[in-house]
Amino acid sequence: MKSQQQKQIGAALDAIDAGYAQLRAACSDSVGNAFRVEVAERLERQHRVNRGQMYRVFGELIEPPDGPDDPDLPKGTVISKLLWQRLRITSGDIKKRIIIAGRIRPRRTLTGPQLPPELPCLTEALENGDVGEAHIDAVCEGVDALPSRLNHRKGTAERILVRHAKEDDANFVAKTARDIAAELSPDDDFDEQDRRRKSGFRMGKQRVDGMSYIAGWADPELRGYIEAANAAVRPGRHQPHDPVTDPEHEPENDHSPADAEQFELIDDPRPELDTDAPDDAAADAADQTADEPSGVEHVAVELDTRSAAQRLHDALKLGLRAALASGAYGQHRGLPVTVIATTTLAELDQASHAINNPAIPMPPPARTGGGSRLPMRDLLRMAANAIHYLAVFDDHTGRPLYLGRTKRIATVDQRIICYARDRGCTRPGCTEPGYHCEVNHEPAWGKGGQTDADCLFFDCGPDHALITKGLLQTKITDAGRLAYTDDTGPPEINLAHHPEELLKELFDDDDP
Image 1: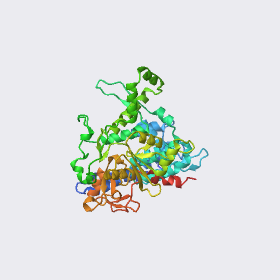
Image 2: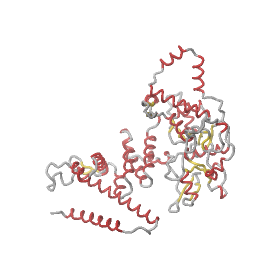
Image 3: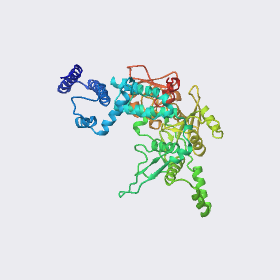
Image 4: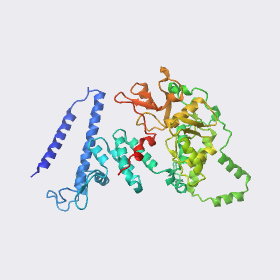
């Protein structure tokens, strides 16, 4: 005989089944896309609420509040095996659901009293249908990435991640989680020798089709070069069948005619590159190879303690460094393809002293145009050996103080300001880095917009199209940032590329 609770839950499930039967039978041929989007939103929320209830059931199956013995089940029944049989899901899926249920459901001590869930903010969001599976994974992975010495920060980290999970997609949450881990683990926490030992690539045997598999770890400097090179080899540029061209004779415009309206600000002649100046390190190596006897070269090899993987890593780095310095990649959106880094005046000054004084802590890493973190030691070393762009900002006002470059071209300077100030697309929630963005006017050029640094901002192509179509409106805030609105709420700025602002409460609000 069914209990009152069983009848109540069964009746609710019957009502849900009946509702879905009516929904399946309903015709939707002429409801319009606006209504279909509304239906999709409601179905997604219902799916999330349903998943929250599923975790509730899994949690109670593992720790039954009414005890493990059930007269309706054969004695010795293994619940996981029964779930595998009845739900027809893999054992791995069952295990994952059990683990998540254990983290978002109330816990019991050995003596019986209940404890709150490990992740209370995530529990509430899931019960309300505010987050999906990908959000759950991103939040859990973000919290788990923090070391045990930062346990007192995990509550704040979870709160930040769940708040953004309610507003943004899982990719944004995952990026925020990485920013949290980076902000709470300063660059000094990672020994340079540890990085040196870990860096390296391994190349597998060549297959019959001529292909070889490469895998490994890139240090921050190499990643910076790869980001810059990858930005140059975008759709339509540097394709395998293209002839090798002299960068001095490449066309000045690096965009298609369709981009012309968006790039009016960089129609001036591009800066000329000194392609005759070789990279210092590469030149030194070439001179030694040419001038020194073979015996000296043999000694150098004997003193090299790098593994084969590390040498391959460094070979790739050397090649990219030389290629970037030579100008062979041409231009990317009006700039010679190179590494762009952003820091503050105080951090640059502190780093220059910390290099020679171990008592001075190394400041946080600079940010590259690709969105990665570049340790200050690497930044200073790179800046000393090659042509790169370095934008220095005031610590308090956030206004640009200095642009370190070899030539001064106004429109190029303005683009660098966008790299340094915006770092990426300015539309709230967008995680596209600066290398993937266009510079656009606010107000629009056709509406009298000025080609001044304070009136130029980064947008990725799809988001700029939304502005052009009038689906998004923009305005410049008092702080000089671009804010967006779709007329359903107040204008907002994008914090995705500014973890120091996004994660401010990590340092202002300690957990008890």
